[in-house]
Length: 208
Image (cartoon, rainbow, N blue to C red):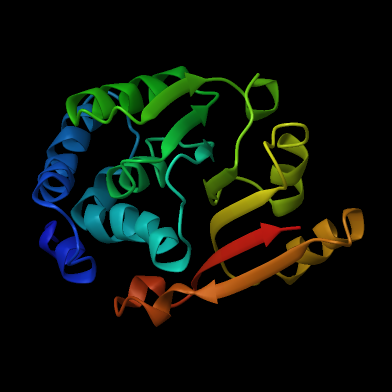
């Protein structure tokens, strides 16, 4: 079983409060997993690698400015949103999912960790009456679909920070055909983490 110490090794700048919150995460998800399968039972053994550390790759790659409004699209059990909300206490996160049971788990985890910067909403992204500075997502949908869902939802210019894997050339070309002015930047997560799990994983930024 991998412990939260792994997170502290990669992020030595964490405060004591943040360390405590990261340590509490596993037990909270273990408890919820007894009733709602938000994380596969097999995957719980690698919880801190597959879910928490993976989510925090976005914090290695990009700076989330204080006061930003961030939407985590299709957050599921709260990834990458919950780990990012712990890491960035001065950023406001809306964790959005269309499955009510998962949103209830996210809301409970946020409440028990006293994350005042998290709002869990049971909605489809495109129906939200709110605007954002940044959108995050982890393996939720193709880039073009994410782009379409966020039309009319931006405070300023579009800015996506995504967690994806594999060959993304087809996804990228589909999006560029629709919006040729977009810039898409890809970075391998293995440049920050040494675990084999991250060998094919990437962080992607999409912006104008």
